[in-house]
Image 1 (cartoon, rainbow, N blue to C red):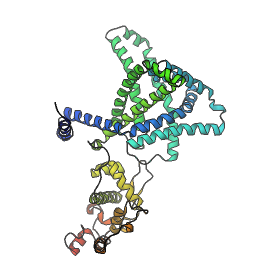
Image 2 (tube, rainbow, N blue to C red; image 1 turned 120 degrees about the vertical axis):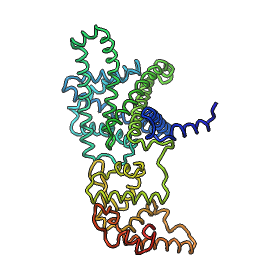
Image 3 (cartoon, helix red, strand yellow; image 1 turned 90 degrees about the horizontal axis):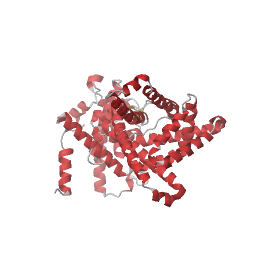
Image 4 (tube, one colour; image 1 turned 30 degrees about the vertical axis):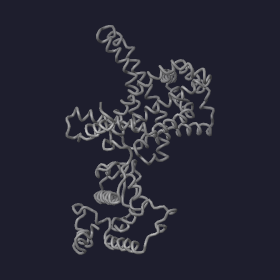
Length: 465
């Protein structure tokens, strides 16, 4: 029997060791699936997804009635608002009798909310409550996708309202179409003929799962403030759909065997079970989003969690690589200089790239465009940004005024040595600018004080220093 060390060695060598690009298709897909599963489980064990699911439970309870009130108001115009009650009851089905009780109470609350008589202030507060829920959901998905920027306020307002208003209409339109198809004479005739009857029955059983996967796919595409590939969103939605079905079965069994909780919590038992079901639902949704993220970014799937810690020379190399790519794309009017594109071009995790871009942006070396997601441009003309200023900004990043550079006591000899090294770097780099990082093939002849010229004039290796 293998010990822990042998199992760890086996996992490292057999699962994480092979280069997937060199493996057969079936083995490559199997190992990639195992690695993504490992990464998602690791994220769940870290506790971050659990904390965000708990936060969403609280926000959902506060926003559920306003959200359903707006959806009811929209669906009443189409005469299908009763379908929302049916769908809500189906969602609460794993709660058993308590689910039916909670559903009836929610419907009573929603019916008592008269949107038409709330007035402008009341309606504004109602919409704000719903939008705050959507914003909290977006933040959770942005965390999973390592996206630091939220949508601008105007775009947030319009996008969220579009989902709130149009989403229920699309959902119930699809349900209505499927119900209409099932009630047609042709379908009824085929149901009496085998094997078509069994196939139609299987399709009817499969339809709820398909609708859940489609709904999750749309959520994964829309909610993160980044570009999500449809294939990756579908992969995450498929995982979340399977987890949702399994959670529904196990939770229903849990509710059946939870008579002791009713005896302990009395009237609060239904609320506690409802909150627990909400928590499981959000956790499943966030786990699927994590799977979608790792499917789209396989380079982020690693055995160790967290961003890699860069050495000082790696920070310098990455910063100059980023600035070179941004300046070259600026000169050639290439629109690819977003964070994700830069990360792919430099073969660096997007989270690490984003941290260094934030540092360069705070130093005033680059600026973001108004695009969504933003692109990155030099803050001013490349020839006016000295490489000495760039190196200073890189080296000073993260310094805290509370614990300043000068507070460190250093012997005079060591202080003079470091000062001489810094002065030498400044003398070399001050004669260069970001314009010297431009590819000669795209910019024509380089100026006299170019990197190549300095290398000749200053001796071997001076420019590199």
